[in-house]
Amino acid sequence: MEKYKKYSKYLKEKYGARVHRIPLQAGFYCPNRDGRISSKGCIFCDIYGSGPTTFTPPPIKEQIQRGIEWAKKRYGARYFIAYFQAFTNTYNAPEVVEERLRQALPFKEVVEISLGTRPDCLPEPILDVLERIAEHRELWVEIGLESSHLKSLIWMRRGHTLADFIDAVLRTKKRRGIKIGAHVIIGIPGESRREIVETARIISSLPIDAVKIHPLHVLRNTDLEKLYEAGKLKLLTMEQFVSLAVDFIENLREDIILMRISGERTKELFVAPEWALKKQEVLQHIEEEFERRGTHQGSKLKLGLSGDECVPYKEPIKLEKN
Image: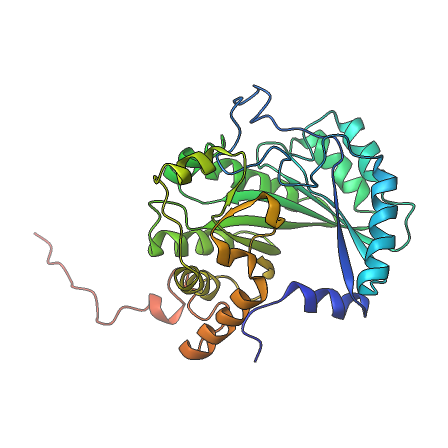
């Protein structure tokens, strides 16, 4: 039995061949950096906005073409996802967002478009744009939640709340053809095992199609690096992350796709923990932990009482009238 719903398998079954993601830097920025929300940004985000490592990217169509040619040669990929990754890819005027997303449409090999954004950057005019794009390609909106707990969101300097996330998910899901992914970080200082599980349960109660799990990791030129170098940040060991990730997935709805259970950044930009770069080893340990526990995705998820459980064990006490 498959222990969790893997994205690679979902894509292979849907398209019948390998599908490769092409990360794009489309020239968007972030309200958590330009002063609209703050000028500091999230504590973990690097100077490239977690996207391709360039400040002067070539035109979007050129990035896509290069990505297609490289992945065909390196991996033999036939189909591709245009992944608008860097910074906040709905933070601009609707007409600008639409123009940039539409640059992926002429490429017939691009079967999906995916974009990363914040929960507070999905106003209705932007959703109008996304709904139009979804008429032409399968469209994924990946929303950074990171944690459902306010104390953690404040520590990360996210600048949004769980309420913003819930609102964004519910409004986006009303639109035709849009799939929703949520990003979550495991290993935030001060978060307990129970709180991590609670984030999984909240996600499971919402109309979310996929999740990306990231271990908290330190990148160069971030405020998180300063904390780490000063000895003020304790990171998870691989064993701790594996245990918590399995806890999370056990409490995640069975139909939700796991897009990722690791961090992804080049070694040159990576500081710690070193094990987070060993993607295949981490995934193998997660499989082994599921096997050891005899569990699988969603096996421990419980929201409320079932119909049978709503029947009292005993007859209610009858109160005498005065």
